[in-house]
Length: 484
Image 1 (cartoon, rainbow, N blue to C red):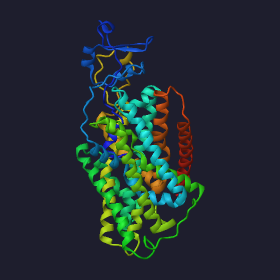
Image 2: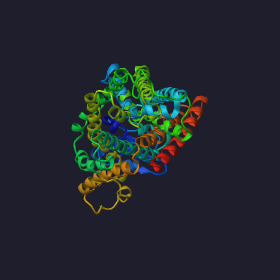
Image 3: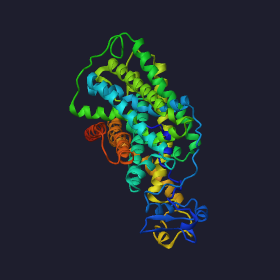
Image 4: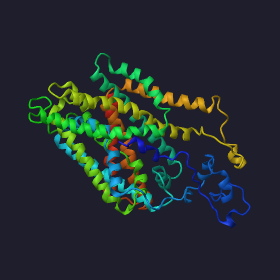
């Protein structure tokens, strides 16, 4: 799952990048305009300097999808060392998705479980290299959305943005569910739904906090992730009797639990290997980008090992009775050190609440762009462009700003109540958005940009398998959610 502190790198909503001709002959005496016949935007450098900021200039960019993008000069010398980039990559990969890894093994069984987690780790690493290679080969590309625009044209930006919004919204729902479920285990006097409703009053203030304050929660998230792994192993070793012991394992199975549960497992496993939208930022910020492939190999190897470790430990400790969140079993099972386990659960209550605002920041930014609400002066634009501007909204921008963020919060809580199962939400996230953004999208972009639409056997097999698993997993997640 993408680390929320870096999600803003996915879609630079307020950055102006317009295809232009800036040579003296092409722009001599010309006003900023688009030539419908040639499909080229002619914007003189002086006019561009005067117009630098309004988003309406992007309308002109849509006329020419093949012209290089004009952007701020990229920093040729990255600031992150190999080790720093490796740490950031692992931090992006490891998140709350690992809490459901034991359940994924319970659904898939030992045989299919190991096949899936290794296959997903390998394929996700392969596609991460594709994203990095494309972004580094063209200095005009700066984000994941740019890759989609280059491969499929400007209209793909809307599709990518919608998928990005769905991913972020699913994460926000998962955070609400995790926090309420953990609090219910700690204080069982009230149901999870009650805590979700009460959480609205805690969540709304966080969506208005500045990003500089919210980014502190990233450190807490990394600490809580490490603590969960450590505590699961400590609990499993410290207890000698079942349930919840590694010395006396619970009953497990080599085969799959059911065909529907296998689809759920697809999404649960895949949810842990997201994060490709921030790969461009990581690759461009490396001091030595030529070592990116080596770095990402280590990152996915470490992440896959940790996922497999906690999945195996949790499945051995609780068998098919393991909960959707392994953290719930840690406190509800007698014989453990309650102080240590309660500390972990309280972090899983507070961290999602604090991360909620961090998640909704990029979601709101993308929605702002899609709705074109952030509108500025347009005197510099030709009449054909200015006439396309929407009418002045009934509500003020400030009122829309508040309503949008409050609406996202209320909707996230409502969906969490309607779909209370953590596993169903995680499976949907992995099956629908992660398969599309992190497997299918990068491979199809590679075929379009690098291979001239000539498909290799490996790419065809991976895309077909990913598409089949995405449909299967999404359907299973919807069935699981509707049955709740």
